[in-house]
Image (tube, rainbow, N blue to C red; front, side, top):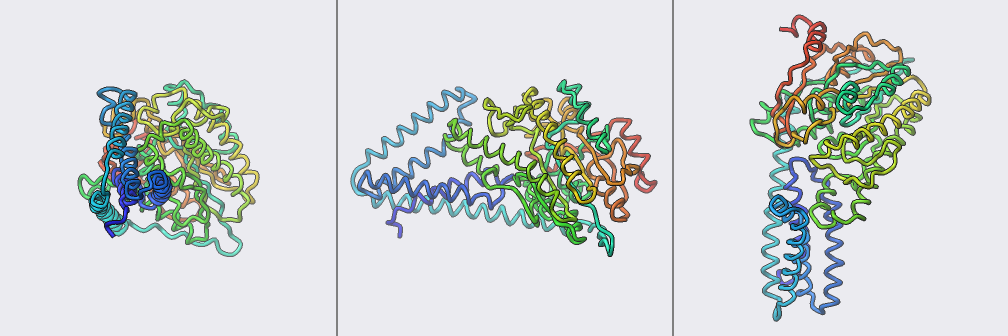
Amino acid sequence: MLALPLHPFLIVGCIVLSIYMGNSQFALLHQIWLPLSLLLSFCTVLLVALALIMKNVKRAAIVSSTLLFVLFSFRHVLVLLSDQIGPVASCFVWLALFALAVTLVLRVKGDYNEPTRILNVVSLAVVSMSAVGVLVNETQRRLAWQEVIANQAPLEPIKSGGPGRTFPDIYYIILDGYSRPDVMLDEYKHDAGEFVSTLEREGFYVAGQSRCNYCMTAPSLASSFNMRHLTDLPARLGKGYRNYGPLVHILQENQLVAALRAAGYSYFHLGPGEFPDDCSFGAKYTNQTVWSADFVVEVTNASPLSLLPAVQDWLQAVKREQRLGVFADLNRLADWPGPKFVFAHLLVPHPPYLFRADGAPTKDKAPFYTKTAWLDRPAYVEQSSFLERRLIPAIRDILKRSPRPPVIVLQSDHGGSLVSDELINGAPNPEMLKGRMPILYAVFLPDRDYSKFYDSITPVNTFRVLCNQLFGCHYSLLPDQSYFSTFSDPFAFTLIPAPVRRQQQQEERLSPAQKQ
Protein backbone atom coordinates (compact mmCIF):
# COMPACT_ATOMS: atom_id res chain seq x y z
CA MET A 1 0.00 0.00 0.00
CA LEU A 2 2.81 2.43 0.87
CA ALA A 3 4.33 1.82 -2.56
CA LEU A 4 1.31 3.43 -4.24
CA PRO A 5 1.69 7.18 -4.91
CA LEU A 6 -1.11 8.31 -2.56
CA HIS A 7 0.72 11.29 -1.08
CA PRO A 8 -0.71 13.96 -3.48
CA PHE A 9 -4.23 13.14 -2.29
CA LEU A 10 -3.12 13.03 1.35
CA ILE A 11 -1.45 16.43 0.90
CA VAL A 12 -4.76 17.81 -0.40
CA GLY A 13 -6.32 16.59 2.83
CA CYS A 14 -3.50 18.22 4.82
CA ILE A 15 -4.04 21.53 2.99
CA VAL A 16 -7.79 21.67 3.54
CA LEU A 17 -7.66 20.51 7.15
CA SER A 18 -4.82 22.89 8.02
CA ILE A 19 -6.76 25.83 6.55
CA TYR A 20 -9.81 24.67 8.50
CA MET A 21 -7.86 24.45 11.75
CA GLY A 22 -6.40 27.89 11.08
CA ASN A 23 -9.96 29.18 10.87
CA SER A 24 -11.53 26.76 13.35
CA GLN A 25 -12.69 29.65 15.51
CA PHE A 26 -14.97 30.72 12.65
CA ALA A 27 -15.37 27.88 10.11
CA LEU A 28 -17.97 25.12 10.06
CA LEU A 29 -16.90 21.53 9.46
CA HIS A 30 -19.38 20.87 6.65
CA GLN A 31 -17.77 23.69 4.64
CA ILE A 32 -14.65 21.61 3.96
CA TRP A 33 -16.38 19.20 1.57
CA LEU A 34 -16.68 21.48 -1.45
CA PRO A 35 -13.05 22.72 -1.52
CA LEU A 36 -11.84 19.22 -0.61
CA SER A 37 -13.71 17.63 -3.53
CA LEU A 38 -12.56 20.34 -5.95
CA LEU A 39 -8.92 20.05 -4.88
CA LEU A 40 -9.03 16.23 -5.09
CA SER A 41 -10.40 16.55 -8.61
CA PHE A 42 -7.68 19.04 -9.53
CA CYS A 43 -5.07 16.75 -8.00
CA THR A 44 -6.33 13.81 -10.07
CA VAL A 45 -6.23 15.79 -13.32
CA LEU A 46 -2.77 17.15 -12.51
CA LEU A 47 -1.40 13.71 -11.65
CA VAL A 48 -2.81 12.08 -14.78
CA ALA A 49 -1.51 14.89 -17.01
CA LEU A 50 2.00 14.77 -15.52
CA ALA A 51 2.08 10.96 -15.67
CA LEU A 52 1.28 11.07 -19.37
CA ILE A 53 4.04 13.61 -19.94
CA MET A 54 6.72 11.99 -17.75
CA LYS A 55 5.81 8.36 -18.46
CA ASN A 56 6.30 7.63 -14.74
CA VAL A 57 3.42 7.79 -12.26
CA LYS A 58 5.58 7.96 -9.10
CA ARG A 59 7.73 10.78 -10.46
CA ALA A 60 4.57 12.61 -11.57
CA ALA A 61 3.13 12.16 -8.06
CA ILE A 62 6.25 13.68 -6.46
CA VAL A 63 6.04 16.69 -8.79
CA SER A 64 2.27 16.99 -8.08
CA SER A 65 2.83 16.98 -4.32
CA THR A 66 5.55 19.62 -4.67
CA LEU A 67 3.32 21.83 -6.82
CA LEU A 68 0.42 21.53 -4.38
CA PHE A 69 2.60 22.29 -1.37
CA VAL A 70 4.24 25.33 -2.97
CA LEU A 71 0.95 26.66 -4.41
CA PHE A 72 -0.73 26.67 -1.02
CA SER A 73 2.29 28.14 0.75
CA PHE A 74 1.60 31.36 -1.17
CA ARG A 75 -0.46 33.07 1.53
CA HIS A 76 2.04 32.14 4.24
CA VAL A 77 4.91 33.67 2.27
CA LEU A 78 2.86 36.79 1.61
CA VAL A 79 1.90 37.22 5.29
CA LEU A 80 5.43 36.50 6.49
CA LEU A 81 7.25 38.93 4.16
CA SER A 82 4.76 41.64 3.19
CA ASP A 83 5.52 43.87 6.17
CA GLN A 84 9.27 43.64 5.53
CA ILE A 85 9.54 43.91 1.73
CA GLY A 86 6.01 44.65 0.53
CA PRO A 87 3.42 42.45 -1.23
CA VAL A 88 4.85 42.78 -4.76
CA ALA A 89 8.37 41.76 -3.71
CA SER A 90 6.86 38.94 -1.63
CA CYS A 91 5.15 37.57 -4.74
CA PHE A 92 8.50 37.52 -6.57
CA VAL A 93 10.12 35.69 -3.65
CA TRP A 94 7.35 33.11 -3.78
CA LEU A 95 7.77 32.71 -7.55
CA ALA A 96 11.51 32.15 -7.04
CA LEU A 97 10.81 29.49 -4.38
CA PHE A 98 8.24 27.90 -6.69
CA ALA A 99 10.69 27.71 -9.58
CA LEU A 100 13.48 26.39 -7.34
CA ALA A 101 11.29 23.63 -5.85
CA VAL A 102 10.05 22.44 -9.24
CA THR A 103 13.57 22.50 -10.69
CA LEU A 104 15.02 20.44 -7.84
CA VAL A 105 12.24 17.85 -8.07
CA LEU A 106 12.58 17.52 -11.83
CA ARG A 107 16.32 16.87 -11.45
CA VAL A 108 15.76 13.86 -9.19
CA LYS A 109 16.64 10.65 -11.08
CA GLY A 110 16.63 6.96 -10.31
CA ASP A 111 14.27 4.83 -8.25
CA TYR A 112 11.20 6.66 -6.92
CA ASN A 113 9.96 3.84 -4.66
CA GLU A 114 11.69 5.02 -1.48
CA PRO A 115 10.72 8.72 -1.86
CA THR A 116 7.16 7.57 -2.52
CA ARG A 117 7.05 5.51 0.69
CA ILE A 118 8.55 8.37 2.73
CA LEU A 119 6.11 10.93 1.34
CA ASN A 120 3.19 8.57 1.95
CA VAL A 121 4.18 8.02 5.58
CA VAL A 122 4.83 11.71 6.29
CA SER A 123 1.66 12.97 4.61
CA LEU A 124 -0.44 10.24 6.28
CA ALA A 125 0.97 11.21 9.68
CA VAL A 126 0.26 14.90 9.10
CA VAL A 127 -3.29 14.36 7.83
CA SER A 128 -3.96 12.02 10.77
CA MET A 129 -2.79 14.63 13.28
CA SER A 130 -4.92 17.26 11.53
CA ALA A 131 -7.94 14.95 11.65
CA VAL A 132 -7.42 14.38 15.37
CA GLY A 133 -7.21 18.15 15.88
CA VAL A 134 -10.47 18.62 14.00
CA LEU A 135 -12.14 15.89 16.07
CA VAL A 136 -10.96 17.47 19.33
CA ASN A 137 -12.13 20.91 18.19
CA GLU A 138 -15.59 19.65 17.20
CA THR A 139 -15.95 17.70 20.46
CA GLN A 140 -15.07 20.78 22.51
CA ARG A 141 -17.58 22.82 20.51
CA ARG A 142 -20.33 20.28 21.13
CA LEU A 143 -19.63 20.08 24.87
CA ALA A 144 -19.57 23.87 25.17
CA TRP A 145 -22.85 24.16 23.28
CA GLN A 146 -24.50 21.53 25.48
CA GLU A 147 -23.35 23.44 28.57
CA VAL A 148 -24.94 26.63 27.24
CA ILE A 149 -28.19 24.97 26.15
CA ALA A 150 -28.57 23.06 29.40
CA ASN A 151 -28.55 26.29 31.41
CA GLN A 152 -30.76 28.33 29.11
CA ALA A 153 -34.13 29.34 30.56
CA PRO A 154 -37.00 28.10 28.33
CA LEU A 155 -39.17 30.62 26.53
CA GLU A 156 -42.83 31.00 27.33
CA PRO A 157 -44.77 28.81 24.86
CA ILE A 158 -46.85 30.58 22.21
CA LYS A 159 -50.46 29.46 22.29
CA SER A 160 -51.91 28.36 18.95
CA GLY A 161 -54.23 30.68 17.14
CA GLY A 162 -57.31 28.54 17.66
CA PRO A 163 -60.45 28.47 15.49
CA GLY A 164 -60.94 31.66 13.52
CA ARG A 165 -57.69 33.18 14.71
CA THR A 166 -54.63 33.38 12.52
CA PHE A 167 -51.24 34.82 13.31
CA PRO A 168 -49.62 37.42 11.07
CA ASP A 169 -46.54 36.71 8.99
CA ILE A 170 -43.36 38.08 10.57
CA TYR A 171 -40.45 39.45 8.55
CA TYR A 172 -37.22 39.98 10.44
CA ILE A 173 -34.83 41.86 8.14
CA ILE A 174 -31.24 42.52 9.22
CA LEU A 175 -29.32 45.33 7.51
CA ASP A 176 -25.75 44.28 8.23
CA GLY A 177 -23.56 47.19 9.29
CA TYR A 178 -26.11 49.94 8.55
CA SER A 179 -25.50 52.89 10.90
CA ARG A 180 -28.23 54.91 12.57
CA PRO A 181 -29.44 57.80 10.37
CA ASP A 182 -28.05 60.52 12.66
CA VAL A 183 -24.60 58.87 12.54
CA MET A 184 -24.93 58.54 8.77
CA LEU A 185 -25.45 62.29 8.52
CA ASP A 186 -22.89 63.42 11.10
CA GLU A 187 -20.04 61.05 10.23
CA TYR A 188 -20.63 59.90 6.65
CA LYS A 189 -22.35 63.06 5.35
CA HIS A 190 -25.09 60.80 4.01
CA ASP A 191 -28.66 62.00 4.43
CA ALA A 192 -30.93 59.00 5.09
CA GLY A 193 -33.81 61.30 6.04
CA GLU A 194 -35.91 60.47 2.99
CA PHE A 195 -35.43 56.74 3.62
CA VAL A 196 -36.61 57.10 7.24
CA SER A 197 -39.48 59.41 6.27
CA THR A 198 -40.66 56.90 3.68
CA LEU A 199 -40.67 54.15 6.29
CA GLU A 200 -42.75 56.34 8.60
CA ARG A 201 -45.20 57.18 5.79
CA GLU A 202 -45.62 53.45 5.17
CA GLY A 203 -46.64 53.08 8.83
CA PHE A 204 -43.36 52.10 10.51
CA TYR A 205 -42.27 53.19 13.97
CA VAL A 206 -38.61 54.28 13.86
CA ALA A 207 -36.67 54.36 17.14
CA GLY A 208 -34.31 57.33 17.00
CA GLN A 209 -31.87 56.31 19.77
CA SER A 210 -31.51 52.54 19.35
CA ARG A 211 -28.16 50.81 19.79
CA CYS A 212 -27.01 47.25 19.23
CA ASN A 213 -26.61 44.98 22.24
CA TYR A 214 -23.41 43.45 20.84
CA CYS A 215 -21.01 45.00 18.36
CA MET A 216 -20.54 41.89 16.19
CA THR A 217 -23.05 39.96 14.10
CA ALA A 218 -22.89 36.55 15.77
CA PRO A 219 -23.53 37.60 19.40
CA SER A 220 -25.96 40.28 18.22
CA LEU A 221 -28.16 37.76 16.38
CA ALA A 222 -27.72 35.07 19.06
CA SER A 223 -29.03 37.54 21.64
CA SER A 224 -31.96 38.70 19.50
CA PHE A 225 -33.07 35.20 18.47
CA ASN A 226 -32.95 33.91 22.04
CA MET A 227 -34.40 37.10 23.57
CA ARG A 228 -31.72 37.33 26.25
CA HIS A 229 -28.33 38.76 27.07
CA LEU A 230 -25.25 36.58 26.71
CA THR A 231 -23.32 37.83 29.72
CA ASP A 232 -23.57 34.44 31.45
CA LEU A 233 -21.58 32.71 28.70
CA PRO A 234 -18.04 33.65 29.87
CA ALA A 235 -18.64 31.97 33.24
CA ARG A 236 -20.22 28.87 31.64
CA LEU A 237 -17.59 28.46 28.93
CA GLY A 238 -14.59 29.34 31.05
CA LYS A 239 -12.23 32.29 31.00
CA GLY A 240 -10.42 32.68 27.70
CA TYR A 241 -12.81 30.49 25.68
CA ARG A 242 -12.67 31.87 22.13
CA ASN A 243 -14.37 29.43 19.79
CA TYR A 244 -17.55 30.66 18.13
CA GLY A 245 -19.09 27.19 18.17
CA PRO A 246 -21.58 27.83 21.02
CA LEU A 247 -22.85 30.99 19.29
CA VAL A 248 -23.39 29.03 16.09
CA HIS A 249 -25.36 26.32 17.84
CA ILE A 250 -27.62 28.66 19.82
CA LEU A 251 -28.26 30.50 16.56
CA GLN A 252 -28.96 27.35 14.57
CA GLU A 253 -31.31 25.99 17.23
CA ASN A 254 -32.51 29.30 18.63
CA GLN A 255 -35.47 29.48 20.98
CA LEU A 256 -37.51 32.03 19.03
CA VAL A 257 -37.77 29.97 15.85
CA ALA A 258 -38.45 26.82 17.88
CA ALA A 259 -41.34 28.54 19.71
CA LEU A 260 -42.81 29.95 16.50
CA ARG A 261 -42.58 26.60 14.70
CA ALA A 262 -44.32 24.92 17.64
CA ALA A 263 -47.13 27.48 17.25
CA GLY A 264 -47.59 26.60 13.57
CA TYR A 265 -45.23 29.01 11.83
CA SER A 266 -43.10 27.99 8.86
CA TYR A 267 -39.53 29.29 8.98
CA PHE A 268 -37.75 30.75 5.95
CA HIS A 269 -34.10 31.77 5.91
CA LEU A 270 -32.72 34.24 3.36
CA GLY A 271 -29.07 35.07 3.57
CA PRO A 272 -25.56 33.74 3.12
CA GLY A 273 -25.57 31.11 5.85
CA GLU A 274 -21.95 31.99 6.48
CA PHE A 275 -20.22 31.30 9.75
CA PRO A 276 -20.60 32.52 12.42
CA ASP A 277 -24.15 33.75 11.75
CA ASP A 278 -25.76 30.72 10.11
CA CYS A 279 -29.28 30.26 11.46
CA SER A 280 -30.76 28.26 8.58
CA PHE A 281 -31.32 25.15 10.72
CA GLY A 282 -34.90 23.93 10.43
CA ALA A 283 -35.79 26.34 7.62
CA LYS A 284 -38.47 25.27 5.16
CA TYR A 285 -36.51 27.18 2.54
CA THR A 286 -33.05 28.76 2.47
CA ASN A 287 -31.25 30.47 -0.40
CA GLN A 288 -27.71 29.97 0.87
CA THR A 289 -25.13 28.41 -1.43
CA VAL A 290 -21.85 26.66 -0.67
CA TRP A 291 -20.00 28.86 -3.15
CA SER A 292 -20.39 31.98 -1.04
CA ALA A 293 -19.19 30.35 2.18
CA ASP A 294 -16.30 32.11 3.88
CA PHE A 295 -14.26 28.91 4.05
CA VAL A 296 -14.33 28.51 0.25
CA VAL A 297 -12.95 32.05 0.02
CA GLU A 298 -10.24 31.21 2.58
CA VAL A 299 -9.08 28.21 0.54
CA THR A 300 -9.04 30.36 -2.61
CA ASN A 301 -7.07 33.09 -0.82
CA ALA A 302 -4.46 30.56 0.32
CA SER A 303 -3.33 30.16 -3.31
CA PRO A 304 -2.18 32.56 -6.04
CA LEU A 305 -5.63 32.17 -7.61
CA SER A 306 -6.79 35.00 -5.36
CA LEU A 307 -4.69 37.43 -7.42
CA LEU A 308 -6.24 36.49 -10.77
CA PRO A 309 -8.76 39.07 -12.05
CA ALA A 310 -11.01 36.29 -13.35
CA VAL A 311 -11.19 34.69 -9.90
CA GLN A 312 -11.93 38.03 -8.24
CA ASP A 313 -14.66 38.70 -10.83
CA TRP A 314 -16.15 35.27 -10.12
CA LEU A 315 -16.14 35.84 -6.37
CA GLN A 316 -17.74 39.25 -6.83
CA ALA A 317 -20.44 37.80 -9.11
CA VAL A 318 -21.25 35.04 -6.63
CA LYS A 319 -21.54 37.46 -3.73
CA ARG A 320 -23.56 40.00 -5.74
CA GLU A 321 -25.98 37.30 -6.87
CA GLN A 322 -26.46 36.07 -3.30
CA ARG A 323 -27.29 39.56 -2.02
CA LEU A 324 -29.63 40.33 -4.92
CA GLY A 325 -31.27 36.94 -4.43
CA VAL A 326 -32.46 37.94 -0.95
CA PHE A 327 -34.51 40.80 -2.42
CA ALA A 328 -35.97 38.51 -5.08
CA ASP A 329 -36.91 35.85 -2.53
CA LEU A 330 -38.53 38.44 -0.24
CA ASN A 331 -40.91 39.30 -3.07
CA ARG A 332 -41.69 35.65 -3.85
CA LEU A 333 -42.31 34.60 -0.25
CA ALA A 334 -45.09 37.16 0.21
CA ASP A 335 -47.39 34.79 -1.70
CA TRP A 336 -46.45 31.74 0.40
CA PRO A 337 -49.25 30.55 2.71
CA GLY A 338 -48.81 31.63 6.31
CA PRO A 339 -48.25 31.98 9.06
CA LYS A 340 -44.54 32.27 8.31
CA PHE A 341 -41.47 33.72 9.95
CA VAL A 342 -39.02 35.06 7.37
CA PHE A 343 -35.50 35.94 8.45
CA ALA A 344 -33.64 37.94 5.79
CA HIS A 345 -29.99 38.79 6.41
CA LEU A 346 -28.93 41.52 3.97
CA LEU A 347 -25.13 41.68 3.91
CA VAL A 348 -25.15 45.32 2.87
CA PRO A 349 -23.79 47.91 3.47
CA HIS A 350 -21.24 45.68 5.23
CA PRO A 351 -18.04 45.24 3.18
CA PRO A 352 -17.06 43.95 0.69
CA TYR A 353 -18.37 46.79 -1.45
CA LEU A 354 -20.09 45.15 -4.42
CA PHE A 355 -22.69 47.77 -5.39
CA ARG A 356 -22.70 51.37 -6.42
CA ALA A 357 -25.75 53.44 -5.49
CA ASP A 358 -27.51 52.50 -8.76
CA GLY A 359 -26.74 48.79 -8.30
CA ALA A 360 -23.88 48.67 -10.80
CA PRO A 361 -20.92 46.47 -9.82
CA THR A 362 -17.83 48.02 -8.23
CA LYS A 363 -15.10 46.61 -10.43
CA ASP A 364 -12.39 48.46 -8.53
CA LYS A 365 -13.16 46.87 -5.14
CA ALA A 366 -11.89 43.60 -3.67
CA PRO A 367 -14.67 40.97 -3.51
CA PHE A 368 -13.77 39.97 0.04
CA TYR A 369 -13.61 41.62 3.43
CA THR A 370 -10.44 43.35 4.63
CA LYS A 371 -9.82 44.93 8.03
CA THR A 372 -9.41 48.40 6.48
CA ALA A 373 -12.52 48.20 4.27
CA TRP A 374 -14.62 50.27 6.68
CA LEU A 375 -12.34 53.25 6.06
CA ASP A 376 -13.63 53.58 2.49
CA ARG A 377 -16.52 55.85 3.49
CA PRO A 378 -17.59 56.83 -0.05
CA ALA A 379 -18.00 53.13 -0.93
CA TYR A 380 -19.91 52.52 2.31
CA VAL A 381 -22.27 55.41 1.49
CA GLU A 382 -22.83 54.13 -2.06
CA GLN A 383 -23.71 50.65 -0.82
CA SER A 384 -26.00 52.16 1.84
CA SER A 385 -27.77 54.17 -0.87
CA PHE A 386 -28.18 51.00 -2.92
CA LEU A 387 -29.74 49.25 0.07
CA GLU A 388 -32.18 52.10 0.71
CA ARG A 389 -33.26 52.19 -2.94
CA ARG A 390 -33.88 48.42 -3.10
CA LEU A 391 -35.43 47.99 0.32
CA ILE A 392 -38.36 50.43 0.04
CA PRO A 393 -39.85 48.73 -3.09
CA ALA A 394 -39.33 45.32 -1.45
CA ILE A 395 -41.24 46.42 1.66
CA ARG A 396 -44.05 47.93 -0.38
CA ASP A 397 -44.31 44.69 -2.34
CA ILE A 398 -44.52 42.65 0.87
CA LEU A 399 -47.27 44.91 2.22
CA LYS A 400 -49.18 44.82 -1.07
CA ARG A 401 -48.98 41.08 -1.72
CA SER A 402 -49.45 39.74 1.82
CA PRO A 403 -52.95 38.25 2.33
CA ARG A 404 -53.13 40.04 5.66
CA PRO A 405 -50.94 42.84 7.04
CA PRO A 406 -47.65 41.38 8.30
CA VAL A 407 -45.23 42.33 11.05
CA ILE A 408 -41.95 43.71 9.68
CA VAL A 409 -38.86 44.39 11.76
CA LEU A 410 -35.99 46.29 10.13
CA GLN A 411 -32.90 46.26 12.27
CA SER A 412 -29.14 46.63 11.98
CA ASP A 413 -27.06 44.02 13.77
CA HIS A 414 -24.47 46.75 14.37
CA GLY A 415 -23.41 50.01 12.77
CA GLY A 416 -20.41 50.84 10.63
CA SER A 417 -16.84 51.31 11.86
CA LEU A 418 -15.44 54.83 11.65
CA VAL A 419 -11.87 53.67 12.23
CA SER A 420 -9.74 50.71 11.15
CA ASP A 421 -11.38 47.52 12.33
CA GLU A 422 -10.31 47.26 15.98
CA LEU A 423 -12.68 44.34 16.55
CA ILE A 424 -9.88 41.99 15.57
CA ASN A 425 -7.93 42.35 18.82
CA GLY A 426 -8.36 45.94 19.93
CA ALA A 427 -10.08 47.75 22.75
CA PRO A 428 -13.16 49.99 22.57
CA ASN A 429 -12.45 53.62 21.83
CA PRO A 430 -15.00 56.45 21.56
CA GLU A 431 -14.52 56.98 17.83
CA MET A 432 -15.11 53.32 16.99
CA LEU A 433 -18.10 53.00 19.33
CA LYS A 434 -19.66 56.16 17.92
CA GLY A 435 -20.13 54.41 14.60
CA ARG A 436 -20.47 50.79 15.65
CA MET A 437 -23.12 50.87 18.38
CA PRO A 438 -25.97 53.10 17.06
CA ILE A 439 -28.31 51.18 14.71
CA LEU A 440 -31.37 51.58 12.54
CA TYR A 441 -34.45 50.19 14.30
CA ALA A 442 -37.88 50.22 12.63
CA VAL A 443 -40.97 48.09 13.13
CA PHE A 444 -44.30 47.77 11.31
CA LEU A 445 -47.37 46.38 13.10
CA PRO A 446 -50.72 45.71 11.45
CA ASP A 447 -52.66 47.66 14.12
CA ARG A 448 -50.03 50.48 14.35
CA ASP A 449 -50.05 50.13 18.13
CA TYR A 450 -46.50 51.16 19.04
CA SER A 451 -47.23 52.11 22.64
CA LYS A 452 -44.84 49.45 23.99
CA PHE A 453 -41.95 50.53 21.78
CA TYR A 454 -39.71 53.41 22.77
CA ASP A 455 -36.93 55.54 21.31
CA SER A 456 -34.03 53.70 22.95
CA ILE A 457 -35.25 50.11 22.56
CA THR A 458 -32.58 47.55 21.67
CA PRO A 459 -32.83 44.24 19.75
CA VAL A 460 -32.83 42.04 22.87
CA ASN A 461 -36.31 43.38 23.69
CA THR A 462 -37.77 43.30 20.16
CA PHE A 463 -39.40 39.90 20.34
CA ARG A 464 -40.23 40.25 24.02
CA VAL A 465 -42.47 43.19 23.08
CA LEU A 466 -43.81 41.44 19.97
CA CYS A 467 -44.57 38.15 21.75
CA ASN A 468 -46.46 40.05 24.45
CA GLN A 469 -48.41 42.06 21.91
CA LEU A 470 -49.08 39.39 19.28
CA PHE A 471 -49.37 36.22 21.33
CA GLY A 472 -50.39 37.37 24.82
CA CYS A 473 -47.10 36.37 26.45
CA HIS A 474 -45.85 37.96 29.66
CA TYR A 475 -42.20 38.83 29.13
CA SER A 476 -40.63 41.59 31.15
CA LEU A 477 -38.19 43.90 29.43
CA LEU A 478 -34.46 43.40 29.87
CA PRO A 479 -32.00 46.26 30.42
CA ASP A 480 -31.12 47.88 27.07
CA GLN A 481 -27.40 47.37 27.57
CA SER A 482 -24.64 47.30 24.94
CA TYR A 483 -21.43 45.27 25.06
CA PHE A 484 -18.11 45.33 23.24
CA SER A 485 -16.00 42.27 22.42
CA THR A 486 -13.51 41.33 19.70
CA PHE A 487 -13.19 38.64 17.03
CA SER A 488 -10.21 37.18 18.85
CA ASP A 489 -11.98 37.14 22.24
CA PRO A 490 -15.73 37.12 21.46
CA PHE A 491 -16.97 36.34 24.98
CA ALA A 492 -14.93 38.96 26.84
CA PHE A 493 -17.85 41.39 27.05
CA THR A 494 -17.21 44.99 28.13
CA LEU A 495 -20.28 47.00 29.13
CA ILE A 496 -20.59 50.22 27.14
CA PRO A 497 -22.42 52.90 29.16
CA ALA A 498 -25.58 54.23 27.54
CA PRO A 499 -26.02 57.94 26.82
CA VAL A 500 -27.77 59.78 29.66
CA ARG A 501 -31.03 60.32 27.79
CA ARG A 502 -31.18 56.67 26.77
CA GLN A 503 -30.44 55.49 30.33
CA GLN A 504 -33.29 57.61 31.68
CA GLN A 505 -35.74 56.16 29.15
CA GLN A 506 -34.66 52.65 30.02
CA GLU A 507 -35.10 53.16 33.78
CA GLU A 508 -38.60 54.52 33.25
CA ARG A 509 -39.60 51.23 31.61
CA LEU A 510 -38.06 48.81 34.09
CA SER A 511 -40.06 47.41 36.95
CA PRO A 512 -38.91 48.18 40.53
CA ALA A 513 -37.53 44.63 40.83
CA GLN A 514 -35.50 45.02 37.65
CA LYS A 515 -34.08 48.37 38.79
CA GLN A 516 -32.75 46.64 41.88
